[in-house]
Image (cartoon, rainbow, N blue to C red):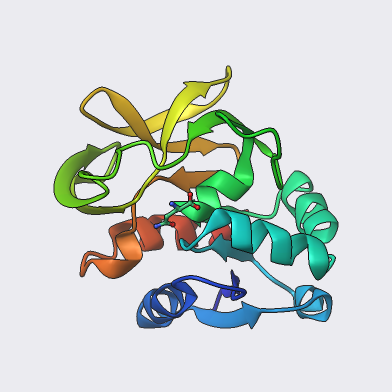
Length: 190
Ligand code: GLN
């Protein structure tokens, strides 16, 4: 059984825990440094508010150990605010956080009126999937080696780079399980 650590500082971590458990995985919440000592097969960074999560990561001294684990190859799956935490660059913001994923993101990229919406998109290898966007970023630039997994209206909204999977939307709030299943498979074969 795979053991997945779910960053549980703020945001919708509970929905990710439920997805992992529904797929037969084991989920534990990561709230402090010691929690990272568990023999994790993968990590999930949930949606929420990236500035709050980023500050908590720094205050709780979780930033460096998480960065080290991801750099060492631990699979990570990040949604929305989590994607912002992973991105190497954030447009219109000097500060970045884990910066392990070589992409540039634009925060709150869909503006106020279109802040939240539901759609369906074609996800590479998985077909047509539901996608819920909540004050989402999109990916404005990718470096070489980053695979684009989904786009919406010509904007990149899902990527994979080696052990890192980053999505602008929230598969944890929809009934479809296939993206979580895809991530658990990466964790099983790491
Ligand atoms: N707007 C949030 C941010 O910039 C992300 C929103 C989300 O995770 N649903 O951090």
